[in-house]
Image (tube, rainbow, N blue to C red; front, side, top):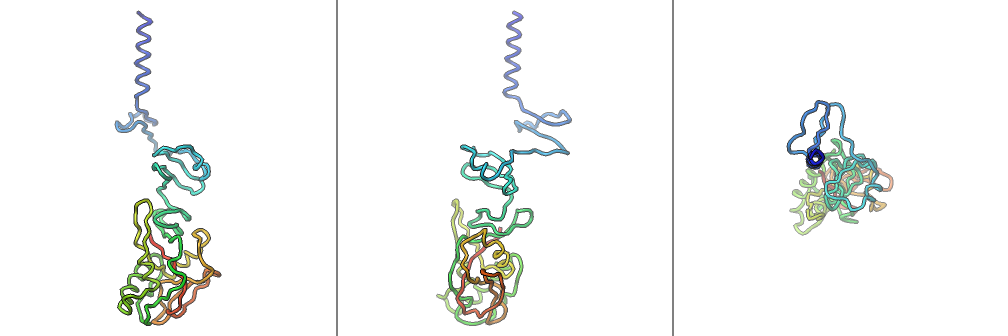
Length: 246
């Protein structure tokens, strides 16, 4: 009888171990009722497995929710069932319809480049030289510049096409999401773009338009063969690559 009691006690203990919640802390507090594992500390953190991108990609059949710290990209990543996603973004990441080429706010925001040129030779103007007022420069200035250029120049030729318009018209669908908020980069953004040209890839050994106007007849461009920025007449036909912000 005593032996039977011991066996029953052990079974009860084993059962409780199988179904118990786990709390890891220094104050002996109970785990939160909603959590199977509740880790509490004000002086230490949770350290997930650390591995390179190559090591991550070698994981066999990862399950949705699997989390690691990627030492190649310096960020946490979670497998969502079809791909690895991060709560921060990094230069060179395939994201938002293109390739990330600039980040700020610790990777929460940045700029994305289209994966290919939108034109290999198109003019800035729409057949007529006119002042568009797009002297804005700096981060995200290209979006406003593009909207102003299209609004100002469309009346010159309703069927015409030009640098800002091909960017505004561009859209791409990835993972069932369509991204349509592309624009012609400002002079400043174009230079950020140039600095990461090898990461993004696919550029011609040529010059690219910016959305920054110099005056009625000329606008800023950047040579992607040596990085020089200068201005030329708006009726020149040169390359265009669209960007978008996140």
